[in-house]
Image (tube, rainbow, N blue to C red; front, side):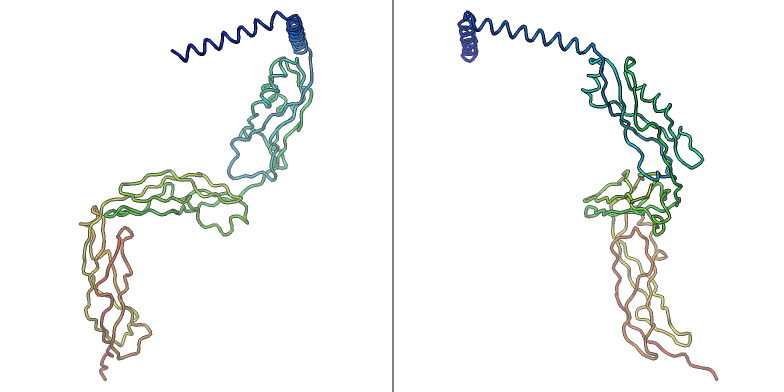
Amino acid sequence: MKRLENIKQSFKSIQRKIKVLLPHRQWKEALIFLAFVLVSFGFWVLQGMQEEYEIQVTIPLHYRNLPPEIAFVQSPPTEITARVRDKGGVLLNYSIANKISAIELNLKELHTDKSGAFVYTKSDLEGAIMKKLISTTSLLSFEPQQIQEPYSKLIKKNLPVVFNGDIQTEPGFVISKDIIITPSAVNVYGSDVAMETLQSVKTTYLEIKKAKRPINRTVQLEEINGVTIEPAKVAVAIMIEEFTEKTLEIPLKNVNTPSDYTIRMFPSVVKVTCTVPLSHYVNLTEDDFAAEVSVANIDRNVSGMLPVLLTKKPTWVGKVTITPASIEFILEQNSRND
């Protein structure tokens, strides 16, 4: 209440000061003169708004539906400069907005000439400009008066899409299947130089941490200079589920052993322990793995140790441990029957 009372007192104080000033003759004359000036200015503005003037306006040009298999030889014009005439009040609308809404050029609807160029004639442009102007506005001139843009055909390739990213799962979870990209291949258009060494297209980098449920994302493809990619986005599906551990016994294979020699391995089987998604636990068998040793570049009639190499495993299998990691062997020459 006290604050409201203070505000009221302030207004009353201002009123008293105005009442003191107004009786003075000079102050009254100044106010009357100012009022006449404002009224005169208003009439001058109104009169000016009724007279006709000429101004220059800029209209943006937008190109739509450019077929992916072609490219402009050079950058097409992005705006039209038009000179128009109308009453000041109408032209003020153009000036305040500073620009008129863009003219949309649908390239699918444009015809091409014999030289291989998109053509938008003077009459076409004039009609498009008039649609952007108020009906009372006169179009005096405009530049450019015609759009004739040459284009070139591009080479087309259908290239596979490669996932680009890092997916880290929560402890106890694993990526249980191959990452699925839809579509798996896209159409790529470009010049012969740009396409010469292009073998695949990457997704933009996708990083996910602590994942513990399936991931479905729409991902943009990486842009490539001078190349058009269609479609520009793909769907990425990553199956993530809990895992458990499974141990299997895998028979060892030997490779590169001369036909007249026999290799004895100790042991002849190894244990493969791996992390496996729960949904694959029952179906994972020894046939899904292959382990081997190689005796290449080893002197004949020798013994020693050879490392065990895992040469086959499902992509969705996690951490793999081989026991033992190396085995003893004896290489013996076969006896000959004379």
